[in-house]
Length: 246
Image (cartoon, rainbow, N blue to C red; front, side):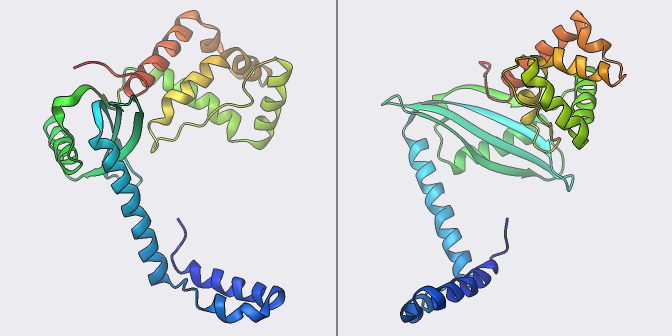
């Protein structure tokens, strides 16, 4: 995420080092081009190489499944992230993010299907080899669990003192995890990992909140904990960790 013009700055630093270490090779290093145009061209070449290698892998898949994450970026533009998981005839496993499709206008099921078909067509995927598919759409039935979890996690991680005290408490509780995880709304697929970590740390989180005189009744409530565990499984299933046959 750095500007391409940073290459000029790197070149200046490089030449300064060369003048001190090996001034006799100054001409050799000065011929190395790191201009914005050159950096842009090289990045485009590397990007094309990555895409070509990815397409070669996709061509060799005997069977594959698709996972889709329909989310919204910081500019309120709907984005359809397409992931492919498959296996070749040599039993080599391929799993990768293949394309991010901006959804301009509506995001109905028909719109998503149209965008997906355009994507599979551009990747030359043979849909006869498609064995399963999962749509990762934001749902509201888990809102009560997410609201409580996000509030607790943010309370711990957003304040340096709280964060430090929480991390210090975990070794004392002989927990295998060293910290909690943030959930980013834009990176929607992070939700499953965050819920899984909170489930494992539920007792420690409850104790920490109680020590701070903060209500933690949900974390002690068996029904709520059951809903938390269910939410975790749903999120992993719809994020491509598990796929459902269609």
